[in-house]
Length: 380
Ligand SMILES: Nc1nc2c(ncn2[C@@H]2O[C@H](COP(=O)(O)OP(=O)(O)OP(=O)(O)O)[C@@H](O)[C@H]2O)c(=O)[nH]1
Ligand SMILES: [Mg+2]
Image (cartoon, rainbow, N blue to C red; front, top):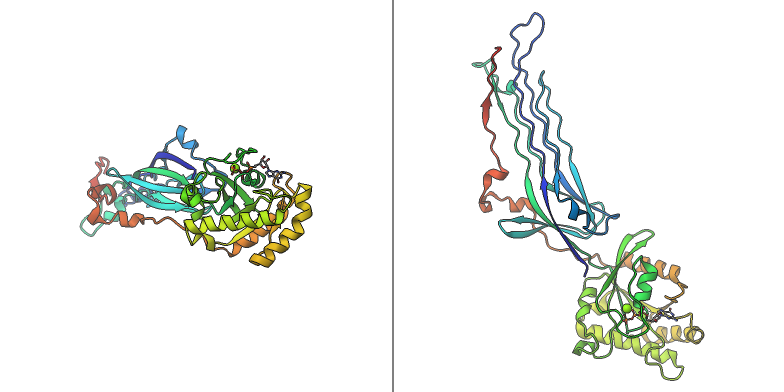
């Protein structure tokens, strides 16, 4: 699983102070109080963006501040609010708040264009006209703006793949990943070229951003630790669907590509089942690879029929190496994904829960109470 981490500091804007002023017009020498309220400080949001792939940008810049609210104006005019700040992160970013040495997961931005309010801007202070009363026609009190929230945040990308590629070693899983995505996974003509999972992002015409995980090949006995074992299957556990990549050349006896294909499918399903019963129930497509090889192509109709007869499934033929069959495969993937259950979400704690005053040692930081101040207004 691709993990990419960054720590940042976010600071929402402080509220603007209230204004102290008095109306001054021709013929009204002693006007009433007209100092306006301060503007609200800008909020800081974190927003998931499809065009971001890593948290690299946060290596060079890691402090983010929204602008403060403006001080109140005369004639009861409120100060302008500070501008909100949006920090773009890749889809699949988890947001943790660091506090008192603890990390709390507050949001899981697992879909595109989702925003999370991470630091709230401070309220603006009150202007002196709000302090007028029957006993005090010339108040000089005002309040300062409330400070914006300041937080230390940990960002972590945890791409949970939508699609898992399952196949024997050398089936062409990595070749297929490279064909469907912009990945550059290592391809080799020997088994176990892939030693740890590769992730790629597939852009589907209507579903958009879709993550594919290419894992090491599975062989018979993987559940007992043969080959690289079945430890990598946890990467397909949370996927929404599986792609079985069948290599008709695997363990071939003579030129019986049909039996070889059926056997490897049977073996893969067995190993998955031994690992976790639930994985085998996921929606899946079965792909017969290497159709660019003439003998394989000649047997394809038979292979197709054999899968239909034995497992009641329609297989899709492709050549991951030449790209033939790519478009039909994409259509089939999109159709299958539309019906597949949604991706599992991580469990997050709502920030409002975090600020439950009873479990907050430092209340003043968050619920800063406004203090009434007076301004020395000499002229009056
Ligand atoms: N002829 C032909 N060869 C292919 C095709 N797809 C992959 N290959 C070849 O098969 C070999 C294995 O390809 P990989 O993509 O590394 O296979 P893999 O399933 O990722 O293998 P492991 O990582 O070892 O599990 C390479 O030599 C590829 O060039 C195909 O469609 N046709
Ligand atoms: Mg591979």
